[in-house]
Image (cartoon, rainbow, N blue to C red; front, side, top):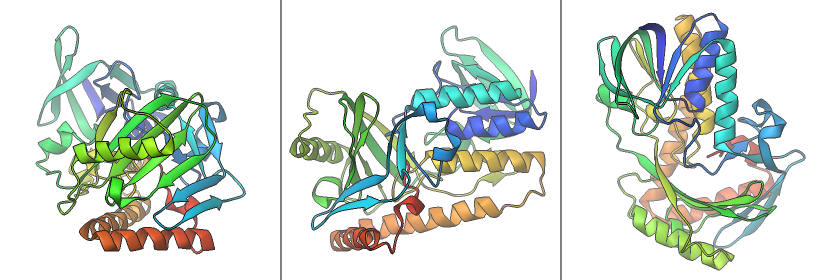
Length: 346
């Protein structure tokens, strides 16, 4: 088999790339190792500036014009006239984006895993039958997340990896909360994100080389902090995932990296959905037209670099981390900073 473009990974970035290509008459092949598209550890928050306007209203579980931020010294309520953040179910979002890509003419192979990449060909294996197939391509897009095989094939290291831990428990809440507390989360944060009939309770930690808190310590801190908030997580199932923010490029000849595979997640917030979709769309446009302006990607990369430097700074000193959290919260309360502009979807 031969395809003009093979996309490894059917996350939001890979499916966005596939849809754009298919709409222009190019049939891409999306290879997804999971049978069900959209299964990923994720708090499911999407920002107004990022994705709310792109997601059908029936996929939105709850939306929030008010954000509650708690630091060591402050309890802030940040309110805007329209919802700042909404929550979505990642599996439903994946199904919606897959339907869009298929309707445009893309092909998706779910339950297949890329086993090898060589030259302009890949070897894929069906997970159940172990059947292997060789497929050739003109262009290859790595959209296969933080542990990307395509990235490893390019010889790129992962030296900046954040970690997200999430508990999805039953509950019907209406207040979205962010907690900055270095006792529990070092230079990361904890969250309470209400969904339809469940609540996402979790924590994110950027793990740059100077970060001293281990994943085990983060989980312990999360459980202790949640107990103070009134949630007992000891018997709940935790899910964790690494978040790659070690960006080292996105174009490598006939190979592209997008989203977490490119290290484009925010080191500061763990945001991954928005940069995945934007980089997926822009990669498709460059494949279609090599002279396409890189302005949007350049802006995304500049913002990513700022977030990476801030994650490094806040991780270098507990005192600086404390001060930064308090100053940002004051800026939000005074209107100097706009929450809707931070695009902290994760």
